[in-house]
Image (cartoon, rainbow, N blue to C red; front, side):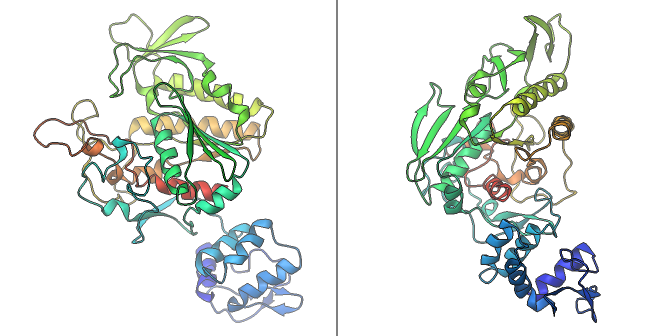
Length: 433
């Protein structure tokens, strides 16, 4: 315990214990930094007595509910639990989205054999991917611990509740990851799918928990002319003043929502507003004003956040930031590939200009909304930077079953192998809950 305690103080460079008032007693520093220790009920509390301090504070009714829960874990797992307790008091200021990928020899919480819900294009092991090193990493925030996702606890929290993932195929990728981990406790029953199997609903009967994924890649009304391989026969018709009713009509049914925009806004699209065509994004040969994807994305997100803040229900919304791809040399449609086998370290890669613009718009609109409509129901699920560091986690050519090296194979360097890096998103999700 003393090592954790001293490490904490060195991390924040604070000379006095951060969550006790003026009762501190000057003593000889033992951690090379601390010049005073607190006292509770007249007792001086030193580093090795930190558990006693917490118990005294609990007895005095000064601890938060989170601290009361976390203190139960102190004896079984003192390192992460101690950080969690300090975080509960507000002593540790930690951004869980800033950190590094560290090796984790315990490996994934499920396999492609234990989970039967993995779609073929993300089933990298079944499809013959020969290297498995990408499975043995976990996300480690700087300055605090991030416990692994606990499926039993998650389902307990979600009893009698409903959750929806709203967005494109990355949202579908994420919900499959969550379903695979939850299957360790209870198998989900699929009770609905749309004609194209893109929107689905699952039930966990023992917990009366409903989990949905709603296919709405642009979050707006859109006419899309595209096959399953992303090949378009016509430009998208995108209506910039009409939200997609596939999700708005159901929104009030959900207790929790994760939603995202993303790469679909980079596709060629004709923009409609007020019943007329007003411009486009990347439409050479058409006599239309080039407004750019950033124009549409900013307008869409502002409409979405206006809807979220003006609704009367208490749905908690986590807005996920853009997911970078890792195509090298070219793009997905002209031979781009991803064959790296280890994560990047910070500073080894820069975010692309397009992803930087998209994330900038997301933060701009989110922060504007948070400033004018403060509350606990809208949160930022900022997975961009941690995803940027994982070029090794994509299917690549193994979106196909045992791809041949003789012919040209379209690589997937956007979605994630399952199991894979996207599983760590659930650790973050649990922490935010």
